[in-house]
Length: 68
Image (tube, rainbow, N blue to C red; front, side, top):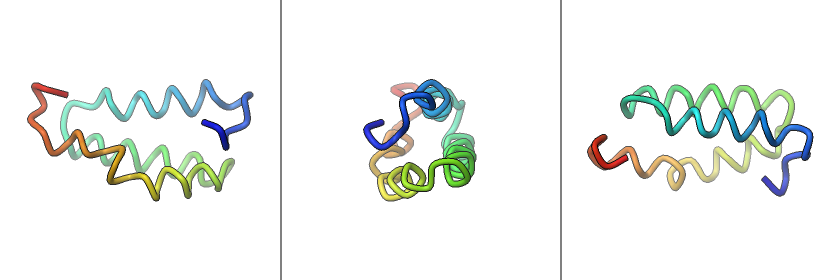
């Protein structure tokens, strides 16, 4: 969030949380792609940062959904 303007924190935070609220790995990855699309237009530095951290952010999808 340090590279996100404070005025856009709520939107970026809500979209990031929506990634974690998906029911399965395919939906998680699709929602993350939508987050990247959203931030790429308005916040290219944020999009680059999230894309670089994609593997770390989405590691939880390698575990059974019951433990998400």
